[in-house]
Image 1 (cartoon, each protein chain N blue to C red):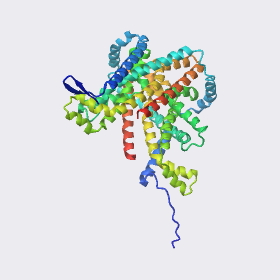
Image 2: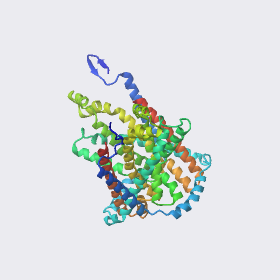
Image 3: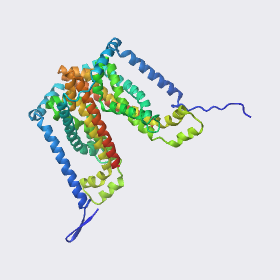
Length: 271
Length: 265
């Protein structure tokens, strides 16, 4: 942090000249990239629609209010389905993620050359395909309905839980494992008494976190036919029944806030 | 000598016996009710298995060539969208996250900002995209707006938590020099949250790219549109190619961003 002398007084500046230039260059390049990308987007945009969007939005809001409150009672079953898709999906996902995590952790994998890359590939591909795309594929295979949603959410959760879990496994304390080993324990006993107790807290917090995310994801898999509240949303938007759509949106906000509240409670109780 | 054998048993996970049994009961009733209320059409699934097999085989071999122009255009559009949306989203998130930090903002602003965050977090990108496509027309602009707005919920929430955890004495030292509010934020708060800020930006860039693959399905532009068109034309070979491209780009982005994050730490 240099002190700069100017004619007759000294002044303090946060960065010296070189850092200042670097910062300036960073901002310049950033602005350049941003305007370049924005130019490309703007060339594909019909600006008339964008500038007209506030009228459209006001019109839409006018149609959404007042919400058709009676409609809520027909929503109870879809909301129940959505919760089930999230819960069962998370359970399936975490159950499959456990063996994958053990295979891909550096310190527990049985073969570094073959099984570890394979398991890592499964984890990454599950992570990179969004649950809506999984649902799109599964609806074609098992037909529209809750089951497709459950499997889609499950498949998507594998990657997330697997990745966080194997990182947790890699960070365990080796001394404890050695202590168990010194008592003459076999591999399975090392696993149950040495490794599992160490990763159990991580495991619970990961699965709760994923459940929270999955509630949100489960609201959209219905848009492609995989059950839950998304089916209703799609149908009512298709019907242009905006007064019902606003009820659905409210229900989603309530469900998400509720799930967030529950996860916070559970996390506090466990940790 | 004592003849009694001493046996060690592992402690149960939950100490309270009543709670343990109660939890098991609750979980099993829940599972039972789920099983009873979910209609699973086994007939359809049995029918679906050969169909699914055909469906999966239709993906092979992936066809990169026939639609290579569209795939490339889709990817680049996704990239532009991601970059612009991340920058815009972060720029909006900065004031929101300052407002959502308990130690900086007055009560009124705090609740307002928290409300914005909750609202942005509640709706999945796809739902937001449906509305913005309706409001602003098809194309990458609607997708960009969607991604920027959903960035707020993620970014402002995590950043505001970091702002709440800052070292108070450092901030106070700046304040005691008689700084204005902006100087205080710039010299007292910002340097403390900068590492987290950079890490979160990279992470969000990664997420936004992945999400850009889905919002195209509802008309938000990018590689998702290409994927959707491929599905609609029943060109599953092309769809497979698009999926492979998405997976590999996500892999590259993930590796570079985790590497970068390690470098910064």
